[in-house]
Length: 312
Image (cartoon, rainbow, N blue to C red):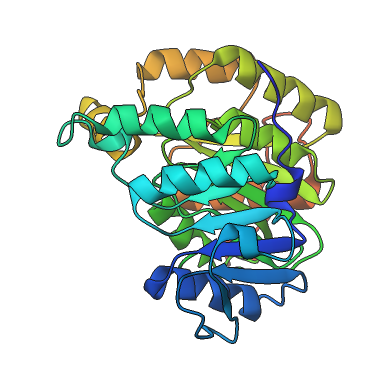
């Protein structure tokens, strides 16, 4: 399988936002707050400035080809926008809209629409659909339609999850853990979680990668990720969802991912040498240890406390 180049998408020098409303306004606001110093363009029929950014009427009117694009329009317009962006050579896009494969139980045509989105993208990387996008706190570059708790940093860990809600909450952590990259991948219509993990390994500022995984997909792709991470000395840690039957059903309804059997997931993680964490607080604390200490030589740990037994 072809390995897509995610460098322009995840580390952009120019960003475009397609659409209006509160979500797109937040993307512009968060770019400003994080101090992104690249080009920021809006695409909307109304030229009135939003967050100080005037609009271009269409993609053909932009002064250049954007590296990363947040698509904040409805699902049908999203497919059209992806096709146009791919044709003009854009670096990649975040598809915010829902109503694709995760909605097939309510809309029989939703699966066909996701297939059309994949076809429209061609070789251009696409995150989603049904996802929030990403935060690059190294460069202050983000396609993120909401508040977050990330701060600029020079080195830090990356967190990769299918759940935008979990991603938002993890950015608000107060555990002295520098979050350099937070990426959500939604339905993974085209670009898989393993693809994104490989893209994160391209950045030498990433010290460790935390993976919140709903479904594995291609085990061979994950094997390549594990091999490369080990060769580069970047520790991986996983929090695998879907341990119970109820959790597996919830996973399918969330992003149309198949969680599979928990025993199979554990066997694959064991084979890959990726340690598994069972809850989010431990997930964050483990990443903090790995960021500070790097790959651990063994699973044995010692704890030194300032508190002990005092004589009566």
